[in-house]
Length: 335
Ligand SMILES: [Zn+2]
Image (cartoon, rainbow, N blue to C red):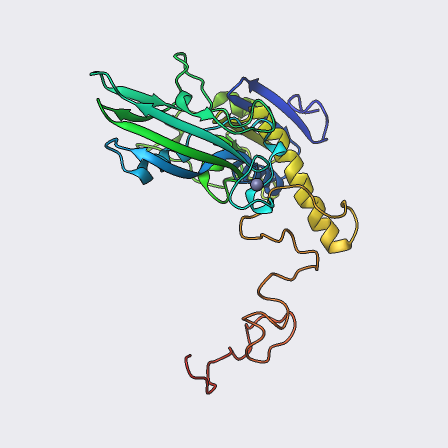
């Protein structure tokens, strides 16, 4: 039996290190496609909170409004309990309200001769968020200041109303829950999926990650024949949070979200295997109507009324590929 796989073939997760900022773990007996899907889901589709709209009431600092607004958007906000908020696009309000947004106010004026630094800690929640955690600026440094937003000299002031909304990193990277996700399989490069980088003339002189190679069953023997049928089965993940969610929350939500997506694929293909209705997962920003229940029809391509199908007599769910494109070769002014 493989000493590094005590479960004997079943999918299992083994944590190597876990602390408030990082989770380093191995998934074993998994396949590359699904492992990579999990990585991509954790990077891009876990909802968090970030400042999305800024009302600039006063800004006499040396930085332009849009420059500061961009910096504000990138400040990590506590996203624990973000599920208590709606996506703003799904909310009945116009603009923002307590059900879909958290309002933070930044109001600072420098009156002394010293240069004054305005930090993330100076963002004050001025709405009624659904719980105590969500929307608070993430502050992890020893001085308890958070990131520096702008510096002010005597007489300069800044006053902004920041509306933080729920979103996913697929729409904008400011909603990313993780700073980085390390992903590796095959640390000894037994599968030859790539050529290892090396300096000089001998790749064997380069340093190797001996710990991971040991965890992956050891380095190949000198005369070991290449196995054309070998596939990766062990995947090393290293999830680092920006502070809005705990690393284990990111992993847990990633697995749950991926399961929901796979369940939906099975459900749409077979009509079974998944729960009915809304899956509660993240939505792509362009799909305001939620997921389409009608099978494979993509909005805009299917149906006779779309701009692709309706104009040239192409009916139903047919794409224009391989058929006369509407307009071309026909007598239509304006094309
Ligand atoms: Zn609202």
